[in-house]
Image (tube, rainbow, N blue to C red; front, top):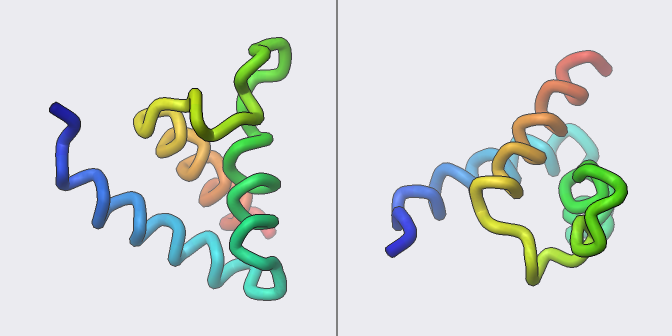
Length: 70
């Protein structure tokens, strides 16, 4: 069973990311800042259906690190 605590934690991170780039639509934000920040060469890196939540959260953390630099 997946940890239900991940839901609020990931929603808080999404909120922080979105506030950094408020002009983006939600789909743009998720695809551009989170999904496509995965490892190229993985055939499923751009399809959120195949990405586990822990990997999505790592990508969110990466987006937050980038946001701090801008």
